[in-house]
Length: 476
Image (cartoon, rainbow, N blue to C red; front, side):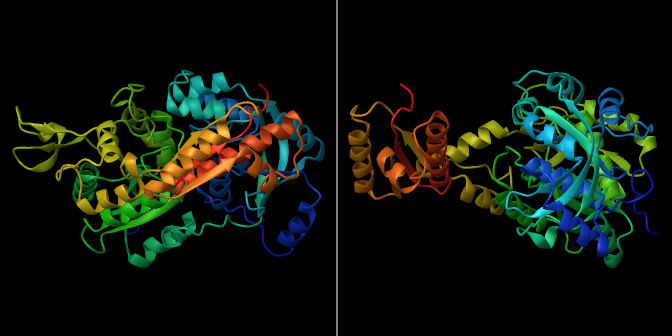
């Protein structure tokens, strides 16, 4: 029996244009104001277009947006916990409300969609944070990103898809909701269990998912949220390679790895419910909801079972079955992982926090064997070597003649003497001549010159090199 979940709202949405309508839309797009999407916006748009956000047919208008904030429901009463709107600058919003149609591009200039602008309003980010995150405290990582990464105006309206975003990395693990449903049929998988994750899987997560799949007699689908600039332990590429190693821990032909372009909000309980709806749209029969699901790392922002309780409260409005799991601990006396409620009384529980894991990685210290299969740690270490092997930037600044170039050159030569890694000098005069030759000395151009130096230094640092910067202080 095929037990794929029906799409939320009863219909799997597909907003991509075809045939003559597609050709006409492409031709018209050149006349519309153009908005370049950031990674979060591109993820949202992709899931709108391919049905991952069914039943949405575009960005929410203000009445729907406000209803989702206050009641977790669309205006028609259908359950939806996270508001989806397009945030833009005030200047662009003025253009959009005049033309009523805008073209949405990715950062490489590829036309992704056309939007019919139906609504525009000033964002109340403080109020939105209170409803979505339960707090407007900027020390909450999700709130901090939400407030600082959002533009001041929301646009609402329907969208028409032109071209799917170009996703080159790990293409073998990417499926639209319709494609994944077809893949389940091809594999004759009648019951599938989703494990949503945006962090590497170590021993505890492998044990938890293995046990859940075995108890549910379901095929396990590791659904990794990628492309959304999640500020985690390692980058998406490393994380996906670590998942590939984790997949070797499961019996062959019983599980699969899936990459979903989803930007995490870190909104705890609301986001857990959102994940259930999204995984339902992808056709999964069940989803694992753990304690602290979708919660920020560190801090006590939500109760340990708050996410599970909220999802259970609305479970009768979902087609996907909710599988609640207990926290998993490593029991030293048994040398195995067990659910916390099954660990023998008085037993010793080995624990390694993410903070301690980072400390050990940064100092090149040993990671206990019980914590993770060594192949996963090996992948993590490739992307996060000890601090003494990581790249860094040294930034000198000062007025002309203050000695910054002399100091920068002396440091560069001493580091090159050691020969341990590449060293690049971004001196103010050299940068002005080679990278910023077209710039003048207005405030805007001075700021842009410094931003360019910072960008290049960041790329050098990420590649494991040393960047030494020595620009003139632009103002004083």
